[in-house]
Structure formats: structure tokens, C-alpha cells
Image 1: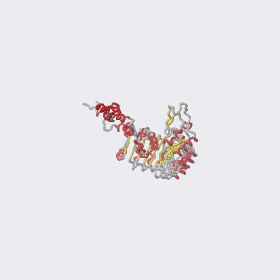
Image 2 (image 1 turned 90 degrees about the vertical axis):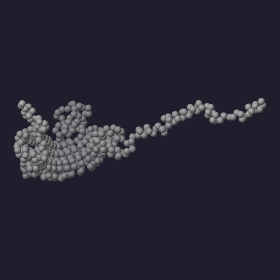
Image 3 (image 1 turned 180 degrees about the horizontal axis):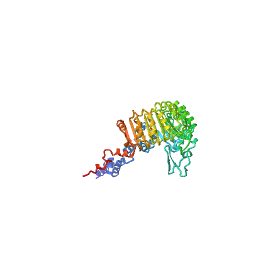
Image 4 (image 1 turned 30 degrees about the vertical axis):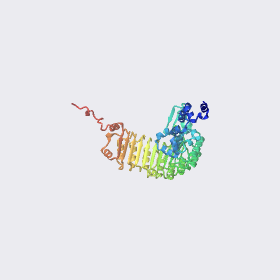
Length: 477
């Protein structure tokens, strides 16, 4: 018994618990730890397993492209798609503005505030005509002219000059031109109204690349400003427009333009005064002039003789002229334009046989004659065109007084005629065509024959079997 008690009381019989015993006996809390560890590793708090893929999907890949490369891509897109592309983001909006070269200004504050140059830094063609008008934006009345369209209020009268009373002051226009010259040094084309000499001088000094200029409501003093634009090649001067505004450009202004802009290639004079001296100065100084357009002129008698000094002139256009030249002078003083190739008459009133005869005499070297909607052109007037022996193309449209006889008398004398266009000339009848005229039609390279509605209908029914007599369809049995 003593031995058993000693053995029971001995410390060797009772060993201390080991870590393995504790692990195996008390497994409940450890199971909780083991199972929660993988759950916590898959939780959103772990950055390496969940954050990489979603972040990469939200990246704007165009940020990896430089502005220059993205500009090249956007420039290749169609023009209709460029405006929607500017709505993608601010960067695309700014890049799209750098692609715009031509702009028509409607809000003058947009120019004076400088926002124009921030939004469109690379402008080369700017039209300020509509921006210079003080018109109500909420009006439902729209005045439309071939030069401008503007909204106007309801309290107007028929005797007022619309644009003349609704224009920005000259000082405001000059201030805008100064801002434009500073912000667009690469300007090439400018359209402006009611500017002064100082405003145009600013543009000439800052924008050395200006090549095309269109001035509305200009006068002799204003034209001194464009004499400093040495690289001008295209100039349009609009002095007076009936019902809109009035101004005056005389021989003095034409001489200033001729002496200051010697590189002119195209010149258009609309509503301008002047005479033989002004046209002569242009011909003598502007040796590179190839196209001259005269619209609704107010020139003195005898100005036609000045055209003979334009030795390199190739195109002469007369538009909406109420008269040509009531007293052109003798034939020996008229001369002619040796290099002239094209004569265009559109919406002119041909009232005098003498003036029409002088016009064709000056243009006797032409190879192309286009007459459209000219009132008063009859057989007697058109016979004067027979002096033009080198004509290859004749186009007649809206010449209601000309007959088949008058047409035949002229074109049969032209040995080089290749193209003939006759449209809406109601007195030219197919029944009056002679065998000689029909033979000429057969050897022409181009023939467009629609003198009236009947011929137009007949040409449209060719090959259909319609337009014939009823016997073709209703045969007797």
C-alpha cells in the first residue's frame, strides 16, 4: 500500500499538458480562426485580388496618345462627325477647336472677351459681318439678303436703311479688329463691315498673311487702310446696297486700291462709283488681275474703255447692273482685252444697243459667253455678239425676247463653237430650226436644248412611247 501510494504521489505519474494536447482537446475556437482566415483574405479589404482589373477597365486609353497624334486622328474623320466628337470630354473639345480654320462670328462679345482665341486658336478665315449687327435675338422676323441675314424687330418702317441703323459703332468695330489681329496672326481671309482706316491698318501690320479681304460699307478713306496689305490677292468692295446701307467709292478709292494692292488676282466692285480713270488705274497697276466682277455699278459714262488696260484679264462678270454704259464712246477709243476668255452677264438690264455693242467690242476675244436672266436682250442686240469670232461655249438662260432666228444668225458665224446651252428661252422654238442649224447641232460636243417647258417634257419622254398621237395606242379594228 505504501508502494502504491508512493507511486501515485510521484510527480512522474502526472505529466504537464503539452501544446499538442491543448490543440486537440480545445478545437472549437481554433476552427473558428481557421475558417475565418480564408474568408478575410477574400474580403474587399485585400487590395491585390480585386482592385487591379476594375481600375484598368475604367482607364481612358486616349490619354496614352499625345495631342498631336490625336489631332491627326480627329482630322481624318468626316466633318459631320466632328461636332459630336467635341462632346466626349474637355480635351476633345479643345482639340476640336484647334482643327477649326473658318468661323462666322455671331456674338461680338465672344470676340472682345478673348474667348474666341482660346476656343479656336488656329483661325485663318473670319467673317465678322453678322457679328457687327445689333439685332434682337428673340425676334421672329428674319430679313434675308444675298449678302446678309439678320433678325429685326416689328417696329420698322419701309423707308429706313436697315443695316445702316443697326450697325456697331466704328470705334467698337476697330477695337474688335485690334483684338482679332493680336489673337489671329495667321489670318488669311477677313469679312467686316463699318470698319475705319485705323482698324484695317492694325490688321495689315499684325496679320502679314492676309490674302482675301471683303469690305462692306466702305469709302475712299477706309480704302487707305488696305494699301498696307501687300499680299492681298482677292478683294471685294461693297459700297452701296439699296435698302440696306449707302456709302461711296469713287476713282480716288479705286486708285488707292490699284497702287497699294498690286498683287490682285480677283477684284469685285459692288455698288461702287467711278469712271474711266479708276478702271484704267486698276488695269495699269494690277498686272496680275485675272478676274473682274462689277455688280450694280454706279459708274460714269465711258468706263468701258478702261477695260482695255487690263491686259491679263481673263474673266469679266457683270451682275445685277441696271445699265452697262450709256455713252461708251467711239470704237477707236474702246480697244479690247486681248487675254479675255469668259464673259458672264447675269440679271443685267440691257436697255441700249449702243452699250451692248460696245461691250461685245471690248470682249471680242472671249471664248465663253454666259448670259443668264438678262432683261432686254433681243435679236438686234444679240447680233452684236457676232464680232466674237473665237467663241467655243454659249450659254443662254432666261432670255425670253431672243428668237430662233436671232440665235441662228450669230452661232452659224462661229466656226469654233463646241458647246451650246439654251434653257428657258420661250421664243426659241424647235419648229423654227433650219437644216443648217440642225447640222450644227449634230457636230457639237455638248448640246443642252431646253428652251421651253414643252421641249423639256419631250426630252423626258424620249423612249417611253408617250407624247405621240393617239393612233399609236388606239388602233382601229
